[in-house]
Structure formats: C-alpha cells, structure tokens
Image (cartoon, rainbow, N blue to C red; front, side):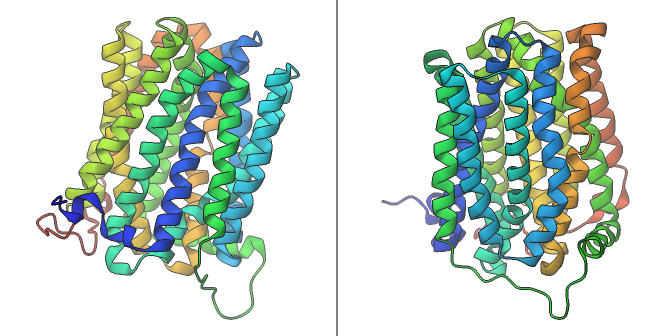
Length: 415
C-alpha cells in the first residue's frame, strides 16, 4: 500500500499506551453521543416538558461541576490510570441501571434525574485525569500531533454515536440505546486497565485538599489567556447548553423529526472530525489565536435553528459549529499541555472544566421557562448573538493573540 504513513498512521499511534487511550476514549465517546438523544426523548415520552428536560440534564451537569475539582486533586495525587479505569467501570453499572428502568417501564422523571446525577459524579472523577493522560503516553516531540489525533478519534466515535442514537431510539427505544452506552463504558474500562504508565508525584508532604486546590487556582491565574478563555467558555455554556440540550430536541426534533435532530448532532460531530483533520495539517505558530477566530463559527448553529425550518440549513449550521469548536479545542488543549507543569496539570484541567461548565446547570434549568416566555426561536437568536459577541471580544486580548505553540510549524512535512 503506497498511502503516506503520516496520513494513514500518525506517529503517536505507534505507541501502545496511546492506542489504548485513544481506543477506550473513542468507544466511550460513541456511547456518550447516544445517551443525550435517548434521554431527551425518554423524558418527553414520559410526558415531560422542555422545563422537565432541562432539569434532568441540569442535574447531570450540576453533579459533574460539583465533583470535578475533587477529580482534579485526585488526578494529581493518585494514579490517573486508576481514576479512569474505576470511573468507567462504575459508569457502566450506572448506565445499565438507567437503561433497565426504562426497559422495564419503572422509569420516572425524578428517578432519571437521580441517576443522571450519579453519572455526572462519575464523569467528573474521570475527566481531569483523562485529559492530563495524553502527556504521559507519548514522547514530548509527538505531543502536538497526539493532541490532534486523540480528539479526532473521539469525534469519529461521536459522529457514529449520534447517527446510531437516533436510529436506536426509533427502532429499539431509549432504554436499549442507553444500554449500548453502558457496554461502551465497560469496554473503555478494559482498555484503560491495560495502560502501563508511570504517574509522577511531587516530592515532599502533601497539603490538604483546599491547599492543593489553591495551588491549582494560582496556576490558572498566572496565565491571562487561560482564565480569560475559561470565562468565555462559562458564558458559552450558560447560553448554548440549553439551546442544544433543551430547545434542539423540541424545535428540530418535534418540528422536523426526531431523525433530523439526530442528523443535526451527527453533522455537528462531522464538523468536529473535519476540524480535527484540519489540525493534523494546519498548525500555526499562534495557534490559540487561530482557534479563537474559528470559535466564532459556533454562533451559526443556534442562528440556523432560530431562523430556518429547512433541515439542510440546520445541518450546515451544526457542521460549522462543530468545525470551529474542534479547531479551538485542539489548540486550547495543546496550549495547556505545553504551558502547565505536570504536577498541576489535572488540577488546572479541573478548573478549566468547572469554570467552563459551572453555569451550564443554571442555563439548562432556566432555558425552558425563559424560552417558553419569550418564544423558542427568539431565545435561540439571543443565544447566537451572545456567543458571537463574547467570542469576538476575546480576540482583543494580547495574550490570546501572541501565545506561541512550541514545536509547531505549518510547513513541516512531519506534521
């Protein structure tokens, strides 16, 4: 076969640990893309309103936010491999329990809310360790490409999961769809259990949980680009989380068809994949600034839902949303990986996650009643405008514009 190895088999995939990490993450992403679709329609089928759906999703998000800082401290204290393996196995059990209640007809909206909170806690314990793991499974010179390859594999899984989610819900029902997610968590736990990595711990006595959190907070505040863009993400999730999680299934799912909403999420995931492919070849010196420019595309998805009843327009908006967010996320992740010390990396990621998502439960809970008061499409238009304004405002930061990424040269054929 004459296809260039740099395209068919990126350098980081030569490493066994990286392959296991990518495989487990991608399979888990496949299942995670199914559950939001299944859960949304499960709540609606139980007679729930947009407000009920928002509260169920907010319970998951709220539990996740509350627990993430603990996950960050533990990720810098104990084995990140153990954190990932254990949380994935426990998530498999929790999702299987949720699926069983739906399959047997025992599910109620309050019960789904509680189970969603359990799943949120387990996800929070996993995320900081998972994001910090990349640097431990590849040599430093291959980190830029690894940071692009890993999310690309995860987004491919999410594309497949988004398409499969709509079909599974339509054919088998929400319960069996969520059971598939449980199986993917079990497979991911198996992959993570086979990782062979060392976890470097700082010398000397450990401080208290609060003191270690304080160290992580001070590290975040040392970097203007870091806390500024975390603040931008807070506004993004406050407004956009409800637009996708609450209004999308109603406006698109009920207005055009449930399969159309699944296709829209699939188009967004396809945009993520396209963004990942772009990042494999396009790696500018001022990558964070380039990513921040691309992030302005995210306003187009809520704008399309607000202004159009045509599936093609909504799919295009979803694709561009995913494209812009994907490019930004890769360059954002690389900026953190290259500029934060190893012994603080999980904690910084936990502050990134919490700062980004802390307002999401509030947005999810309020989206239903606010949108019902002002009109669903009117609120989607407000969301689009807010996203565009805050994303453009970040471009005026000198620190965002001038942060340079080490080892990135767009003309280097090895990249």
